[in-house]
Image (cartoon, rainbow, N blue to C red; front, side, top):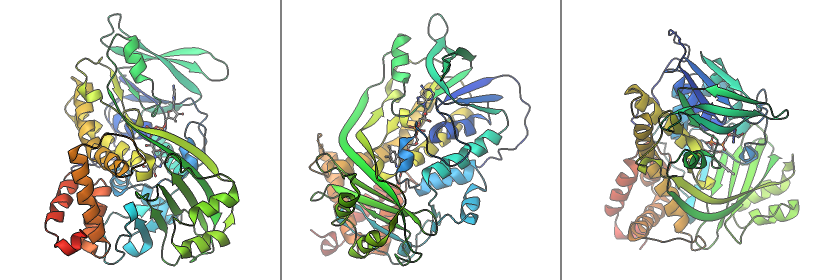
Amino acid sequence: MSDDTARPQDPKEPRARGSDHCVVLGASIAGLFAARVLSDTFDRVTVVDRDALPELDENRRGVPQGRHAHAILPAGTRGLQEMFPGLLEEFEAAGIPVVREPTEMHFAPGGHLLCQEGRYADPTPTYQPTRPQLEGQVRARVRESPGVEIIDRCEAAELLSTPDGTRVTGVRLVERGGGAERELTADLVVDATGRGGRAARWLADLGYEPPREDRIAVDIKYVSRTLRLPPGALGRRKVVIVGAEPGRPTGATFLQHEQDRWMLTLIGYGGHHPPTDPADFLEFAKPIVPSDVFEALCAAEPLDDPVAHRYPASVRRRYERLGRFPDGLLVFGDAICSFNPVYGQGMSVAALQAAALRESLDRGRDRLPYRFFRAAARKIEVAWQMAVGSDLALPQVEGDRPLQVRLTNAYFERLLNAAERDPALTQEFVKVSSLLSSRALWDALRRVETLEPAAKGS
Ligand SMILES: Cc1cc2nc3c(=O)[nH]c(=O)nc-3n(C[C@H](O)[C@H](O)[C@H](O)COP(=O)(O)OP(=O)(O)OC[C@H]3O[C@@H](n4cnc5c(N)ncnc54)[C@H](O)[C@@H]3O)c2cc1C
């Protein structure tokens, strides 16, 4: 077992079920991962979402990001493998593209095209379902887990608690449409309602301090559209990711989802937002992607209109630093930490939080919130440092740049520079950005010290 991902479990493993009950608010990726882990410990788990949940892989209002490119990093892939055995094999059997070799990926973070020679040191491949496909399949698996019920079209409005507010005892729900109210009592309520989650406000209502928020105002805009490309139009490449760089605060992700169906997402930081007009959208891609990719885009058949999504700021809520917190409540997923999506970390960090939840539950339920928030914060830390550091390398992003950030960014610049020609250094960088191990970042930075001055590019 890896130290950073959830332990393998058989979801069908029989166990005696009594009446202890957990309610998970939010049936998106984080809520579903949490429900999967909790169903091994709680007799009953009820997952609640305010959206009408589609049968399988359709977009829905509560997850507008589903219309944009979503990549799962290897840490997330391992989490999926461990929580939902067989799911990835089903994706592959259904023809969903799988990236196994560096030649299948054009990855250019921070202005450096990483070396496409050699083999990935970690054997975990990258699977490329669409976001609705992934969520739909995970939801179907969670729905089948013993003791789990998923209720849709119900909005969580308020927490129920003991009169002194020291324990959360359930949640008040309002049905969408009719407006009827109902109360669900629970031994544990988990808020997984995303970056707009209400836990901080609910805490204040119960007389607790809300958590401190760390924020990086990135002012990102995503514009995406689905395209049909003839098979083989990009040779062996199944994914093209070009990150922003200091002289060009824009980027692109082009992902193959089916044999001939690809998603193009263009991004831009404040003042450099991509347009939604189809012709301008294509022009915007020209200085970002390699010329042969641009030619393929021009020849591709659009399958929908460009859609936009604004993302104002990365937000990390420091629940682990609170001295007082009620029993019977946890916060999970983006509701704790919402990352600038260009680094593709959110779902993988949700899988790491699921591993933290499992580890915390393995030690019982006493002081669970405190133990879980500390364990989750350790999993979040490296991803947050990576995202914030990369954003602050762009002069367009406002924020303090303490010495540690400047040094780390200078080291990464050297590492990426040398990685353009060196498969081993490319592996170091991929290991860090995969979130597979919290030690990889420090190993990679140490590795820079061993580079010849010429290889450092300075
Ligand atoms: C544009 C964009 C692109 C992204 N790309 C990637 C990527 O490439 N890779 C990656 O790993 N991550 C990516 N992410 C992040 C990823 O989508 C999230 O990290 C992931 O969905 C987990 O979030 P979550 O489940 O905590 O919250 P969300 O996905 O936001 O879901 C919240 C859920 O709560 C429900 N809800 C909200 N309020 C209530 C309420 N009061 N009562 C009941 N239900 C409620 C909503 O309907 C929704 O289902 C991206 C995000 C964005 C915005």
